[in-house]
Image 1: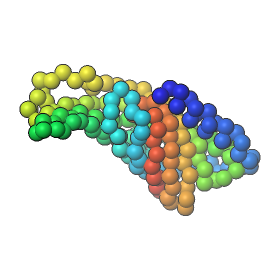
Image 2: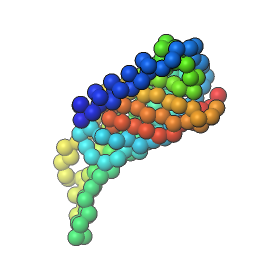
Image 3: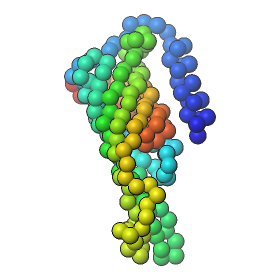
Image 4: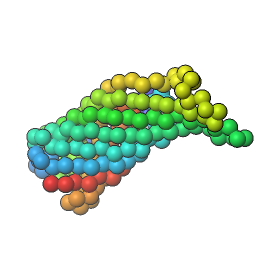
Length: 179
């Protein structure tokens, strides 16, 4: 998994380095983004995390916000079932560096950031063992990093992709911009 993450990061950086130069439009103070997506390649647990995040641009090229993610995995066979449920609550800070790199396409927004989150986990099964079962996951704080980009198909609607550490290795989804 580490090799895949490093190769993805390297490919992303090469793609940005090869883009033609021109003055890019900045992400401006007061802009708001709502993102919804799915994560692939989870850390320390299984499941397919789905989630949403909100960003508010507090200064040109700098945004803050939060995210929420949900993941669940389990087993169901012969009348017996069990599952783990994970909830992630995260505060995020992001720097948008399109202007710094002189990215020519104003619809393209490369960014990187850091997050601090709380992961909760719970277990349940068909025998009612939810309270007295030891969970190897537990509840914990985590530090996350993300490197991504957003491409706006129109003034208000676009898509995004991120690689990082925290909830999932890769996250893709849709985004909406509000002024």
